[in-house]
Amino acid sequence: MTQTCTRRRFLRSTGLLGLSLAAGGLAAPYVARAAATQLTIVSNPGLENATLNALMEQQGYFRQFGVEARIVEAPGSTGPFNAIVAGSADVCMVSGYDGVLSRIEQGASVKIVGAGMKKCALTVFARPNGIQALPDLKGKTVAVGPKLGLLHMLMLQLLKEKDIDARQINFVNKGSNEQCYEAVVKGEADACCASISHLNDKDGLVVVSEGNVWQALPRCIFQTAYASDSALRDKHDGMVAVMAAYGALYDYLMSPAAHDAFFEARKHAQKPFDRASAQAIWDFNQAQRPYSRDLSLSADDIGYLQDMDIGLGSLKHKQSFAEVADMSAAEAAAKLSG
Image 1 (cartoon, rainbow, N blue to C red):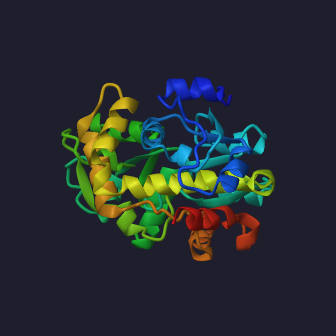
Image 2 (tube, rainbow, N blue to C red):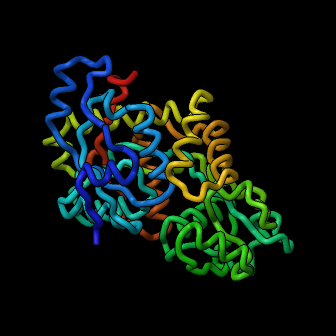
């Protein structure tokens, strides 16, 4: 079930208490319109979202852009999308859910409205037992999540683009990203696709050559943002304000000036604090710049995701850009925050 909470309870539990309206240099009439529209933002619980929430409060971007929001948590990969379809939430700003396009194809009144992290922050890790490059995975056991879930889909696409027959690899469902990594550490699998947060871990695993997903699949959008058609229609000013706030957060997150604030936010979100994983995330954000202040996606971005889903069997046919996406709020937000 979707886990909801009042805005005050959520903000207190995540350290965000104190968010309030403020002009922050914006035109007062716009801020007033945005503030008059309360949006319900849904996200998965987890370390990365908690870190972003803490950093958002530290830097005051919600206040700056006049965001008034009730925040709910929905566990599971499908949780945020289901909450929006059910009418208990308006928008999900960060989601690695790979079923968005197929759910829209099936009739869900939802549109992709932009991107969270654009580059895939994943890599292929393996036990150092002869696996050095992707072709060495043939005949091996590779830990992924559910069949045609995000990890499985990305591995299949990676192998496809490298012209490697995925049928020669034994994929096993070991659950979440973290559970897949642990399965390899414990010897339950030979390799896995997992978060770059493990790049500094000292457990003996190695990175497989050509296994950095952000390099191997440069056109693949890792995290989409999506919203209900009703929110786009009836709460447009609020949507613009939310997206402007996240765009400003992402821009700051990728700058060297964010170093101390990022580590402070991470310590707030993670107990006990793992400095090695935090450093891996920080280094990736600085070197790869996986986000963008402009959250909008192009027809080519959406088309690539559709072609990938069709090729892997999770989508039946290609719909027009307007049928599956609406970038009006993202484009307005980019102008507002630029």
